[in-house]
Image (cartoon, rainbow, N blue to C red; front, side, top):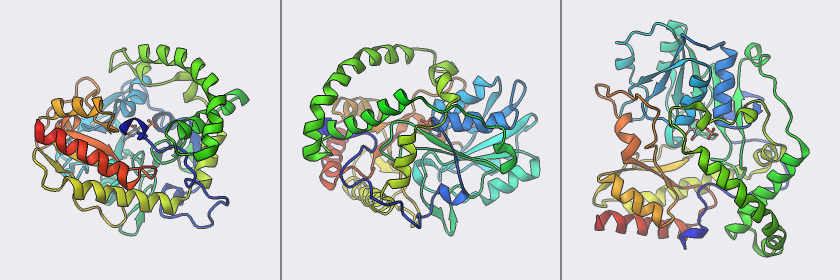
Length: 386
Ligand SMILES: Cc1ncc(COP(=O)(O)O)c(C=O)c1O
């Protein structure tokens, strides 16, 4: 059953609507017109480049991180300065107030898991010190904290499209008008656009989300699939590279091009209200199914009202063994155990431990109730038997 469960949203019959919605729910788009880039990491890269970040500069990054957040910093010759996070996944300002901040040019603050953080104090901290705030909405394209939509606080805001939309690439960067003039991108070629359309359709077909049309398309797509297999071989070799090497995480050509047209169209035509309702419902299903399970605790048992979750975060004891079991069963679960080299142990920090112990379980809009309940049963069994 799990082989048909998509890790990220794929195109299904009900994913889109025929007309662009007139009023979009609270989201990063409230910020204005984004620069569409090829990924969230490319958005971070361009934010840093707009700030003329280079050798000798330091950038604040949480100890809980994906290497794709640090690679753009290293690519520009700057240094990450890892900061502690508290149990709410927010920046530990008490800790930050105590450290030497010389050479710090920017801070990346993240709405982890799609739980919006109140960033007022972080914003004030940055302003007082002349540090640019990069609000990382890779996990939170939608949502609000109280009345404040995600994306309203940063000098720069970045987002990642495949985590919320059935696109295979793409990211957004919001900048002040002045800084935005520095971002100039190449348009992708027609071949890349066509390939992306096929990729989007193929993922929907493979996961059985496109019904009868899907079966018809399958024959056409099988030719492309054969070609793809040889390409995938090459891609997996690249991942063998050193975790601290920016080249392992960044595609140089993609950094300089804008997002594909199909990705932008998917943002415009996705049924956002359906996406929000289904993600919230799936999150609640995970919570109910794993309540009181032995060997694990939900990190955020109560989903805040304005949150549109990216994943359901579960903190697991004996994490290594359980993780291997779940991957082997095809459960769409991630953790960030490949960290950037040199993540320090900091007083009172939760982030470093979360790298291995927090499982990010999929709760996206294309998972049905029975998908989530089936997956939760596998997780529960793996935990109990461990
Ligand atoms: C918090 C966070 N920021 C940025 C990124 C980079 O996004 P992308 O994968 O679109 O490059 C990720 C990717 O997982 C992420 O988790």
